[in-house]
Image (cartoon, rainbow, N blue to C red; front, top):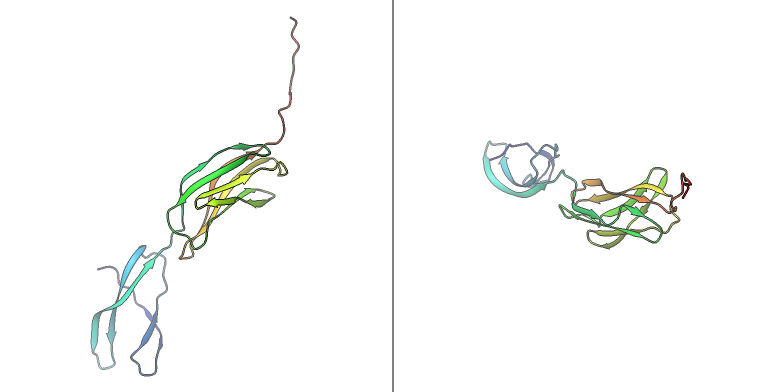
Length: 168
């Protein structure tokens, strides 16, 4: 059916009937479920083929966010941004969202429920442009780090930059 790759012998028990094999994934295998088929041979040349070895699944792709939406792009003190998303696969632990800006420690967004996180600006944060980042790991250990949204924190009132007096 598919490409055949050899397994290397790792250990055998004393009676020689039970073998443990190891397969090191190269990363170029097709993702998804695969059936293991075993061929056994002994020192006398006897061969048994087509023995079921069970199945396994290859997964080399990290989770990705879909249907991303954010409720605000500019926040002042007391306002919040809600970020909603879905992931294309299950994760080993709940995904983490952080608000990040170079030179400023990341701030975790509050998890409201699966796929819904919130950041509420207090006014104590540094003003400027921030990004909302997703970190998620799937059951196979593939790690995603994905930029989901951009938010600007602005706590300053507008300033008058020029004024003109016109005769009435």
